[in-house]
Length: 380
Length: 95
Image (cartoon, rainbow over all chains, first blue to last red):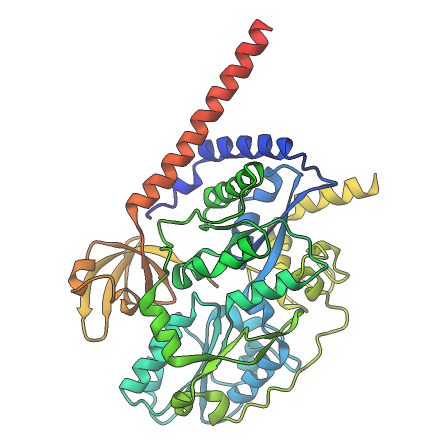
């Protein structure tokens, strides 16, 4: 496949790592006083663990795993609402595989499916629309979630449903938007961050100019990165280079996919279908103003929230779950009291253990060596 | 969730519905091309192009020139490292 092998070349990785090592030394960053970089996107978290990048980087660089896994930040009550919709006799509920195992306060969608509800995994929202065409006597609800990467596909599907006047297709919209989320992270005074590895595929839709305030107002360098190991290493190097040259800019490492202006057709479709919600609840982070979108009134006939009178009553997360602290980077996943004990990928309590892009699941599956090393050092 | 896979557009199936077919590692499947409608005057121009696919939609064309530039930069970093290593070695040898 195009540009996968090339961006996994070990020889090139070695060279970048040596450069990173030198810059880290020059910048006097140490394990005790590290440079703290947040990778915002869960896809990056996944690559970092899958390829063991954290172990390859010098200890003077601390990667903080951000809240960019939409499955992980989905609050429990939205899953509850989804289960309630699925429990209606007339409904076929459809969603992506990732969303199936997210715990609700009563049950996950997978458990609801096991209990007999008609819940189906789809690869694309267009597959859900096809189900609606094939089953005119049933109501097909698509549980849509994700940041701007996924939002255009849902928007185009709703537009197609409207164009074809399909009366039995509905969207339960849980899409979230990146810029207000970054603003909330930057406003958190407890969170000391030096720079950001920016989300690659969100940026291919929204472009890179929306991040300018992070460099200009907050004085944090921001590098939009691709998803292969070399992309991430090169982005870390670009951030360090900015520190060394005392620059503070938004840079784009992922130019092969991300144009500066983003994707205009996708932006138009999103704008046509969606509008900002005043508030949206995030698991572990609380309510963030204007961080979610809902369907515009002219699409009310397709809006599951309106048609099925969704309750949207907040539910408190289990007391033992510390996902919120991990999401904010205050705790490493393995420092959570239930990590690997009562909370595992097979039986997740918190959402960060559910998705392969959640920091906890990534640590659980790939991060053991690093954790053992850190724990051994802590006991010395 | 936000991951995408590269695929190559093989043919256009239905222009009005923005429907095409992509090949991903030899597997063929339909793909929605609505996100690329502003990039070309005729969808047929997309045949042969490499695109990034996410949830059944081609989201962005992969720019080969930019990919090459990024890889060249990485190669240069490697060359800089080699020179640096050589300098260190010769310093040790002469020092």
